[in-house]
Structures are given as structure tokens and as C-alpha cells.
Amino acid sequence: MNDGFLVDVPGLGQLIASLSEVADRMHAADGRLRAASAAELGSDDLDRAGGDFQERWEYGIGKISDAAEKMADSLRQAQQLYEQTDQAVARLFPDPGLPLATAGSGPPGPGGSSPISRALDGPSVR
Image 1 (cartoon, rainbow, N blue to C red):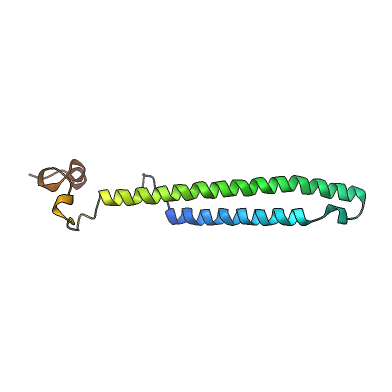
Image 2 (image 1 turned 45 degrees about the horizontal axis):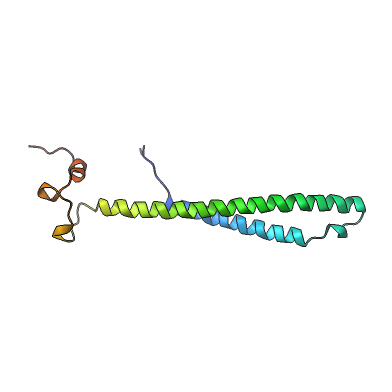
């Protein structure tokens, strides 16, 4: 059971890709909507209704596209920060089965251990 906080970084990447695709699709839909001519529909009433529809949806599609782009950008930044944090934590807590790279690179303290590493090792038995 995990009571902590866990970030699925690859899953975050998939979400970013999906949001980017949504933004691209919305841009394409907005372009197609602008290219359509309401005046080609027939009667004046139908032309007006088509123009009103086009005006409202151009705005809405633009807003959806903008929001998707902003979310994707923010998530990209969050993903980078999670990856940097994960790397920093990994450097702070190297694999205990591996020897230290150099004698001077070990944590300070008696016996080459720090209070954090001693706490992680658990209570000592005497």
C-alpha cells in the first residue's frame, strides 16, 4: 500500500501528447470553419443562422485550443520539474549496495554516514 505521493511521469507525457493533439485539431477545425462560407447555404435566414453559428463556434473552438495549449505547456513544465526532482533525490539516496565513487564524495559524519542515512538504515542493534 502506498500512502505517499506518486507521479506517473510517462503517463503525464501521454496526457501532454493528447492535449497537444486536441489543440492541433481545434486549430484545424477553426481554420476549416473560417474557410466555410455561410452565404453559400441558400436562403437569407439560413445564411444568417450559419453566420451566427460560425461566429460563436470560431470563438469557442479558439478558446478550447488556447486552453489545451496552455495545459500542455504547464504539464510539460511540471513533467520537467518532476524529472529533475526525481534525479536530485536519486543522487541524494544512491543505491546502498553500490560503493561510493570517491572517498570524499560520501556523506559527512562518523563512519561516512549522515543522520539521514543512519535513519534510513534503522536502529542499530548493540
